[in-house]
Amino acid sequence: MDQNIQKIVILGGGTAGWLAAATLGNIFKHSTVEIELIESEEVGIIGVGEATIPPLLATLESLGIDQVDFIKHTQASFKWGIEFVDWCEKGKRYFHPFGQLGQRIDGHDFYQCWLKTVADGNQVPLMAYSPEAQLAEQQRFFLPFEAMNTPLAGAQYALHLDAVLVGEYLSRFAQKIGVKRTLGHVEAVECDERQFIRTLQLQDGRSVSGDFFIDCSGFKGLLIEQTLQTGYDDWSAYLPCNRAVTVQTKNVTEPTPCTTATAQTAGWSWRIPLQHRTGNGYVFCDKYITDQQAIQTLLNSVVGEVIGEPRIIPFVTGIRKQSWHNNCLALGLAQGFLEPLESTAIHLVSKTLALFVRMFPDKQCNSIQMAEFNRRVRADYQEIRDFLVLHYCTTKRSDSAFWQDCQTMAIPESLQQKIDFYKVAGGLIPEVEALFQPTSWYAVFEGMQVRPAGFNPTLHALNSQKLAQSLAQGQAALARSVVKQPSHQAFLTDYCQAPKIES
Image 1 (cartoon, rainbow, N blue to C red):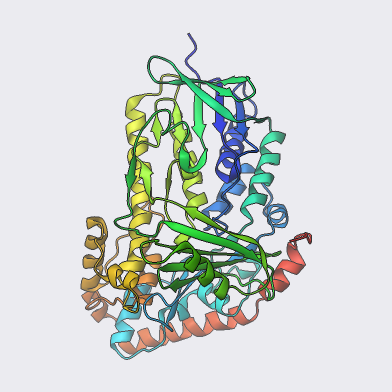
Image 2 (image 1 turned 30 degrees about the vertical axis):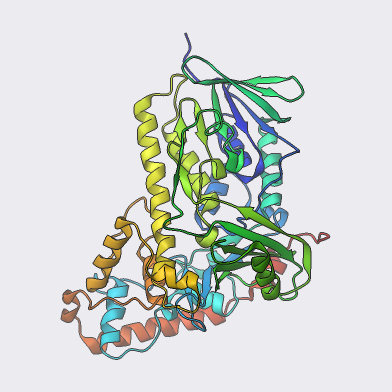
């Protein structure tokens, strides 16, 4: 009997569902494997996560999607990183860039070299050596191929997107390569004696059968939780925010090439500028303020005319105990939720899909494969969780009960070990498959005024004067390269301007 999977059913559209359909549809477009996506017109798209990180660009490339075409159709703008406002203290801001900081000097990590110069009196801030931070500060973008052999060569960027338009774009792409789209609302799920899903019964009497099912049904997890009852690990003890209010505004200024995350009384607010509008939101904890207070705080902070009514979205931070169980894989909000502070939602979908393809099962769904898959997905979530917690637990703010509690909050042991190791001599060991490499940790530590006690003693072997000169020359060369680049808006206008649409 043929054990190869012949039919994959995806429940739910939106970014997660259609990214899964596009990815798997692209892999199986020349095979007999059927892929069918069921989406309901009764279920709206959350569409909160409109900021992304650089790996998305590699995902688009792997699908053969033209980046310029994608940008135009999703009203996208560019992003060099995230500016954090008022997190450490009110009135203080810092930048978390993509890419690397400086160049290694005589085999030494750039950050260690900078620490030595600081000990010798250098007062130039760390981000003066970051291409992305400098480009963002001056609101510039660049042609990557023109930056070759310049200090900008290694700069990395991501995109700000309209999540609804992304879903529509990927839907068109997936259907064009053979994915079947079915409109319908699932009323019942039928399983066999092994608790493998066999059929989804639709409200209108139709049924859809398959060999493997991907649950993109959002927070409710219709298949992975309501049917298979895999359970959920609640991480709100580490990340207490449990609600978000979102609203869109008309653009009154040119879009900036970075996301802005501003600390508020009981959480933080985001500002994500697209070509046609700006996305705004306030992630907060209802233990400290009411929904109405959060809505008012957000409305008081936005710039430009408000489009539509503010939406409240409740959530519980955490992850399913098993993302892959029997013949069901959960993706997106059905898999877990981490607040969008570092724009990781779409990345987690892409990375989960890539891992699933590497371990692609037959109809029996080997338990050893499942266990290893679930371990790796959990590790990805835990890594991001720890990095998010770092933004909160290192605050020096004490002007509200929320921030006072953040200073004494329980933090994961894995994060505590990382902080303790860093504080000795700025030590951070790069991990091959980790999303956040040392530059990200350096940016947040430095932004939150957490400095190590010293630097690696091997740096004493370097001549202080020559080292200082090397850093100064590097900074000057970077500054010269940045000012030659066009403005972000000029770049969008010249190369990838989106069509005007009614807000």
